[in-house]
Length: 124
Length: 124
DNA sequence: TGAATATATGAGCAAGTGTTCATACGAAAG
DNA sequence: CTTTCGTATGAACACTTGCTCATATATTCA
Image (cartoon, rainbow over all chains, first blue to last red; front, side, top):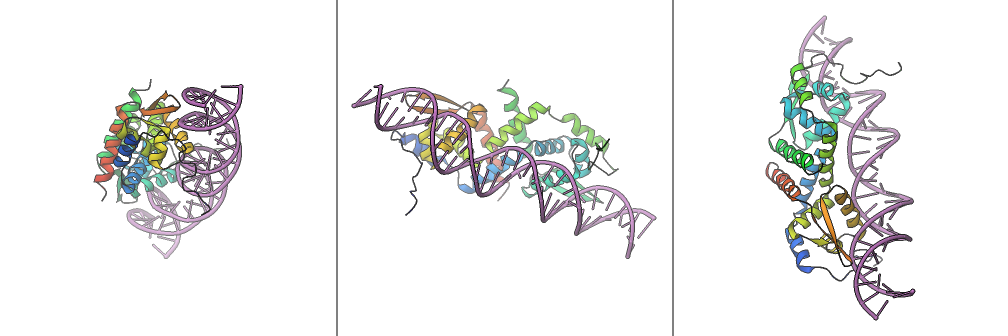
């Protein structure tokens, strides 16, 4: 036993046990926690947020459209779209040579609306 | 002119101009965009998400409580709390030797609820 | 005052992230 | 078939991030 499992944990003795128990009981299962945090992390990047916003406003856009609208390289857009696709936040469909993307459902827009309202409001 | 400003942008010619114009018009101002993405990024980390969840469930917790509830080092918790504090997502108050933290307002809980609903629902 | 406790914070490091560059893939046109 | 266009993707890179460790600050108690 070279490692103390409580190393650095909490050397204090005045823990509010009731509150801690309540917090522990309310914890999300790990899988849900990771799912939520990954969703928020994906939206917590300016480029991906702009992509989602553009799709929300325009409905459908091909990679080329997004590249033009955001003034970013096709490669950068495509990489980010791949992440959003893997997380099922966007869906896509091929139209000839183009790949046309759209938001997968309304939840993303709703989340965006709540977050924007918070950011616009509380902070001056 | 050693640099082409359109380098890598979009070599295609079939841009859907109407849709692109719509996307451009709907874009958030840069400051708002960054504020929203930073908010979401802060919540897009498992540790900070657990902290926010614990505070949401227990109301108020000191650093020591959080360290015990999440089974993480005091230093790690304190660092993350500093970030949440700078973003005004939590407020704190000193109570003797303890620093008692709580969520700053209801928006965070609301955001968390929407995100959790999305993550729990659509994806199996 | 001095010791002990609870928290804050700077430095350092391993791991992760977003972009560019080069290139491969897929569909349509010649 | 080959070429061209739109898109996808792997590698490499600078930059960021979340942790640990050590230490500083602040508050209470002897």
